[in-house]
Image (cartoon, rainbow over all chains, first blue to last red):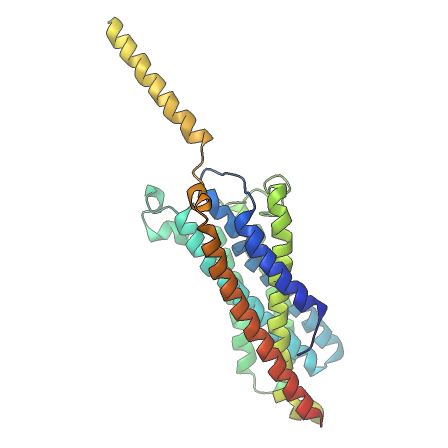
Length: 232
Length: 72
């Protein structure tokens, strides 16, 4: 095993997240109550996803500058872990929402349609679908160099769409998802100092976990694809 | 008439009582905490987390071994 300080940091931070996240006091909010603790898990998934997608696009740009196929592998693996984090964020959000703001007893939510119309959910779904398309595009081009080049360019476009679809568009439309006016979980006014002490370490911890998983996948891919990578 | 006014006042007060309570006390899981059941939840989550981390560590070791054997 490759021993790195950040792997230990990752484990320490995640254990701290669970312990402090469930034990430390949180503000008593009328609608969220104890579920506000989900901030350390659900929101962290999205932050980890954004950071992983950012790393991915940096590698794509690096690929276009150097045309080194290893960079393409890096970009692909970071994007796939980012998608995993996004899917987990979506799934946890669905559970959390159905017990808080998307209350089935609320007549406004009597129809499935009113939840589906939620801009934050549509935006997140769009962002994820754009990244799914990245993988569809990759697998549809058999030629290695062409695949790497086209998908690197696509990755830049996908990244350019990520922030409008999850941050900007949901904010222009009426939404019940918390944190519409401002930066949810980043705004110093709506997140308690006690919660920030857990939230920031949690984001770092979950992101490092994503990076760890990705480095394993990259090393495995480099091993299996060694033959043609060295042939170049 | 006086009785009616009194009853009206009484019901108004009751509604204020309810209003005040709704705003001030937010029902948190204090009972679960005082009974110590929260530690059961923590134990379960930590077990899952350790399982996942151990799995990652094993994978990491295996891949390192593969990398070593590939170099020779």
